[in-house]
Structures are given as structure tokens and as C-alpha cells.
Length: 213
Image (cartoon, rainbow, N blue to C red):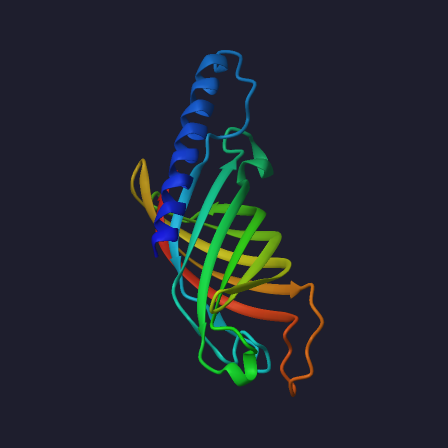
């Protein structure tokens, strides 16, 4: 929990430096009207992972805690036509789990999955207060596994499809809900442990959080 709080504080500090620095740059050259990118914004929210594979290590032997996600995004609202609906961004998420069946998971007590991705998406307006988007992302994922004082790592590639809905409370703050469908492909050989697949996994991850556009 403390590590998540530190992560949020660092991310917020980096965001505000980037956000207001970019805003100042746009103000300085706004007379020439040469920048099409909007300043962008960021999101912070809680994730609630739900494993979908019945024969996968995500669904066998692990008990998940709520995770955290951080996103920074920008878009082309200053453009016309199709491009004004496009958004680009980066995201970081962290999910922790404890092992409740060592006989199926191996000799470790808990694991922490950290994911860093880039994503693109298509946004659409529903009303003055509601809008939504659909995102496609790809990035790296790392599992930090703990067994008493020993630590070992598993790494791989993560792919995501994320529909998202936003509600604007005020012009500078809103809330969002989303459901992320995540497929992980780890760079490990599957151990011979029955029919359990330790290499790939599919998860559905509902999220809820706040957005500063």
C-alpha cells in the first residue's frame, strides 16, 4: 500500500510538470496555430482483476487484491475530421496477489505484476457530460515473485482492449469506469504441473477512478 502511494505521488508530480509546461508552450505559439495536439490529461483509478482462464495460473492458486492504474493521454481535438477522435497515451498498472495454493503455484508466497504500456484509441461524444473511447494497448509486464527473502522475476508482453466511459463533473475533473481485457504472454517455459498453463493468461479488469482532463 505504501509503495502504491509513493507511486501515485511521483506520477502526479511528473504529470503536473509535463501538463503545465506543455500548456505554456501552446500559449506561446497559439497565435501561429501550429499545434494540433490537445494538452491531454491523466487518470488514476482502482482495478479489480478477474481471471478468465480456468486452466491458467491466474485462476488457480492466487488471491488478488485491488490494483492501481495510472494513465497519461493526449488527443487531436484541435484537428478536424477523423483525427480529432484519436487519442494517444501511456499507462502503468500494478496488481498484487497472494498464493493460497502453493502446490499449484510453486514455492513462492506472493507476486506483484507491474505493466507499462503505450496505447491508442478512438473517442466519441455521447452528451455534454458523457463521452467514451475504446483503447488498444501493448507493453511489457513483469512479475516480481516473493518467497520469504528470495525474489525472482517473470517477464513478458501484455496486450489490452479497453472500452471506457467518462462523466465530467466540472471542466477540470471527472470520473471514469472501464473494463480492460488483458492477454499476457510470458517469456517462460510452462512447467509440467497437470493442465495448468503458466505462460499465457487472460484477465478482465474493471476499473473506476478520477480523471483530470
